[in-house]
Length: 497
Ligand code: NAD
Image (tube, rainbow, N blue to C red; front, side, top):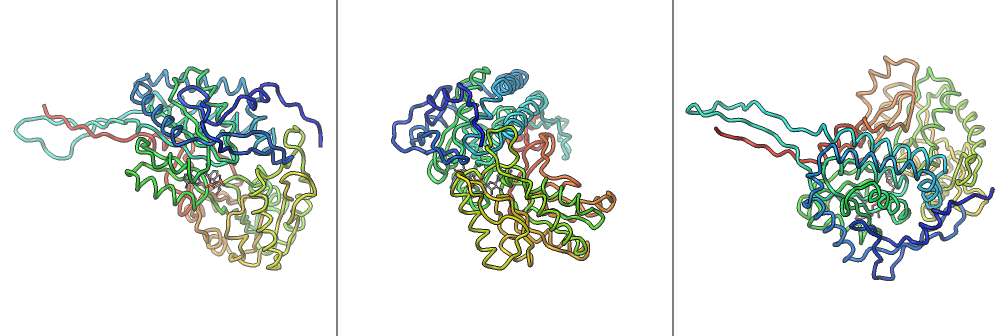
C-alpha cells in the first residue's frame, strides 16, 4: 500500500466538524452520543460525529420551515438557479477535498469519489438549476359549460411543497443527497438531510459550501444520527411536508408507512434492487465478461442499480465462466486514496460481515465459485471480487440483494425463459439487455419489469432521465422533469367573472 497525501483542508475539517449543520452554522450538540467513523481501508477511526438531539432535530426543521416561509420560495427562480450553479462551482473548486473526505469515510476509490460524488453531483445541480425558470402551471379549458353568460377560467399553479426531509444511504453520500436537495431547492422547497451513520461527514462540508455560495441559512440543513431515532423523528416531524428516501427495501416500508401515518406526508422511495443482466446468444463471451464487470463491480458492487443476476445462454456459459474468472483475478485490491487503485474495500465492517455471510452460506449450499468467495488477507474491509454458478433462481444469491462485488450466473435456453427469469424478483429497479440485434432489444424492453432498462450498457444514470423502481424497488421517480411532480403540488384555481 502506498503513502497518501491528505489535504490540510481535510484535516482541518475533521478537527472542526461536530455533527449538525443547521441554519447556516455548525451546531455543537449537547449530548455525548457519537457516531464513530472508521476508514474501511485501514480500520482507523477518523472522526467522532455527535448524534442530533431532539432539540437539534426541531431546530433543523424549524429553521428550514422559517426559511421556506421567510422567503426561499419567493426568491426568483433565476436567482435560485444562479445559487445552485454557484454551489456547483464551489464543489468543483473543492473537488479534491470533498473526494478525499468521501474516500476516507467510505473506502470508495478516489477516482470514483471525484467522478461520482463531485462531478456527477455537480451535473445534477446544474441540471436542476436549468429547470428553476421552467416550472410552470397551465391554463385549462374547463369541460362544463358556464351558465348565464358568466365566464370561468381554470388555472393550475405549481407550488413548492415546503420542508423536505432527505434520508440517504452510504453508497453515494454526496451524489444522492445532492440529487435530492438540488431538486427540492430548485422547486422552492427547503431541506433537512440526514446522511447515513456510515458516511456522516461529506454533507456537513457541502452544507458549509452552500452558505459560501449564498444559499440563505436554513435552506439546507444537515443532521446526523441513527436512522431509527434521528431518521424516524425527522420523517415523522409535523413540519415536514415530504420525505424523499433512498435506501433498503425494509427501511423504505417503515419510512413510507411512518410518513403517511404522520399526516400523509408526500413520499418518494428509491429502494434496493436485485438487478438482472440478460445476454443474448449473439454476444461473444469476451463482451459478456466486460459487460459483467461494468454491471457488477463498480464501487465494489455497492451500487443500487448494479446487476447481481446474470443470465447467459447455456451454449456459452462455460466459456463465459472461465474467462470471467481470469478477468476477476485482475481486480487486485488497492488503497482507495491511490489514483492507480482499481478495486477498493467495502464501506464498513458490518456490511463486510454481511457479504461474507452470503458467501459462507453459498459454499454450504455447494454453489460453484468461479472466483473469489472470501476476503483479501489485508487490514480493512476488502472482499474478493466474486462470481458463482447458481443452481437455480431460488438460490439465496439469486434472490437477496448482496450489495457487494458478486456476480451469480445462471444458464437459460430460450428468450422467453430469459424474460421469465429476469422478472422473477420482488425488486424492479434496473436491468440490462445485451445484444447486437437492436430490433430484438426493442421488442423485449416492454417485457422487462424494471424502472430503467439499459441496452449494451449498465449503471448509467443521467440527470435528465427519470430514475426509480417498479415493484419492491420503490415509488416515484427522481431526475428528469419527473422531479418537479415530486417536489411541487398542483393548486387548481377556478375563477368566475
Ligand atoms: P438503509 O435502508 O439501511 O439506510 C438508509 C438511510 O435510512 C440511512 O440514513 C439510515 O440511517 C436511515 N434509516 C434507517 N432506518 C430508519 C428509520 N426507521 N426511519 C428513518 N430513517 C431510517 O440503507 P443503506 O444500508 O444505507 O443503503 C443501502 C441500500 O440502499 C441498498 O438496499 C441499496 O440498494 C439502496 N440504494 C438505493 C438507491 C436507489 O436509487 N434506488 C441508491 C442507493 C442505494
